Length: 163
Image 1 (cartoon, helix red, strand yellow):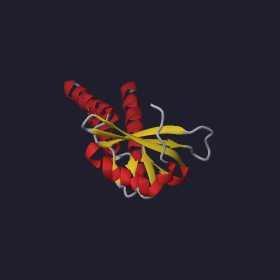
Image 2: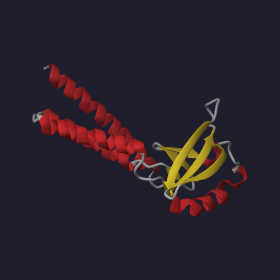
Image 3: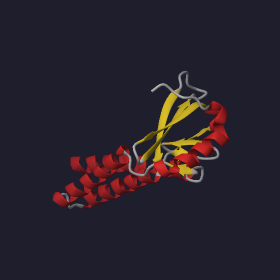
Image 4: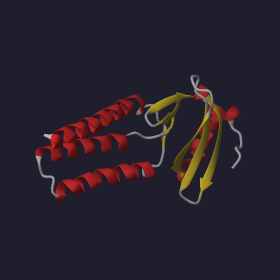
C-alpha cells in the first residue's frame, strides 16, 4: 500500500509539471523567432533523469506503476525539451514565459569560441524591485542575424556591460 501511494505521488508530480510545461509551450511556441541552443546543461540533466528512470525500471521495477511512472517521466522530459528560450517579435521567451520588449532595460552580446553566441539581457519586470540578468546562448552562426534583429528592435537599449 505504501509503495502504491509513493508511485501515485510521483506520477501526479510529473504529470503536473509536464502539463504546466505543455501549457507554457503552447503559449510561447509561435513567439520565438530565434531559438537557443538545444543542448544546454539543464536539458542534459533532465534527459539523464529520464534515462535513469528507465534504467531503474529495467533493473527490477516491472510492475504496472513503474511503467506508468516511466511514461509520466518521459512526458515531462519531452515537454521540457520542447520549451525553448529565445527572442521574437513580441519579446523574450525564457522557461515558457514571454517578457515584452518594454521590460528590457539594456542588452549586450558576446562570443565564446567557435560555437556559442551569448545574448545578455537585463530585464526589470513591473512587479519586481530589482532587475534580472538573463543569458541566452545561441549558435554562433545565428550571431550576426540576431544582432541585426536586436539593433532593429532595441537598438537604443544596447550598452556594453561590465565583464
